[in-house]
Length: 111
Length: 114
Picture 1 (spheres, each protein chain N blue to C red):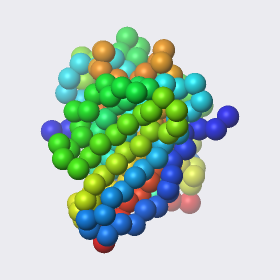
Picture 2: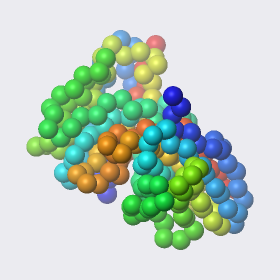
Picture 3: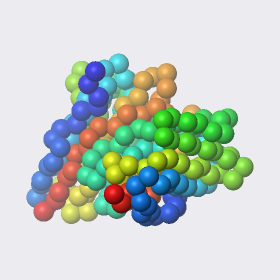
Picture 4: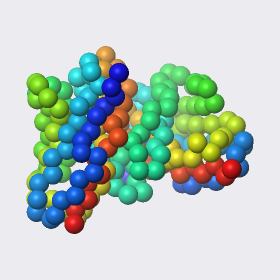
């Protein structure tokens, strides 16, 4: 079964609105990261949040982490057409460097 | 400042042929990871290597797949006797030794088996 599950699977919003994606995981983690993937391209690292952190910001991105609920959320504010992509969360555990990815959220920004 | 480089970007092989995928990590990164992505799915871990050592190959299929990261040169993912089910995007990532979780991904190699 998937370590990470994002929801929703697909999200369409108007340009300028905020987009929120969620990620749930099953086991303990050391870090949780969010990546963006444009269609047919590689992954771009967005943000990393450690297990002892609760919130992190980077530009228009805000990530929260709730280890008691084993969940994280990614908020993109003031969305732009260029934000159209798939977004994945990935977790790693202490002493285990491999990343376990969720199934992704396909975000479409409507101009 | 070159990022992770992978070649070829696209590879077409007939069933039964061999596929060789190459990955050059970010300069100074000594950890290399390979992941596979099937259409409409997330990435799945395959193997984690350091120079001349396989650290974790728990995600590698038992047969036909092998990986190496020699002292000199790129990391190689080798798939022997490819089958249609091997068609996927294969991504390589590298990380600095002091922050192994901070992985930077290459553009991927899209393998199509006909």
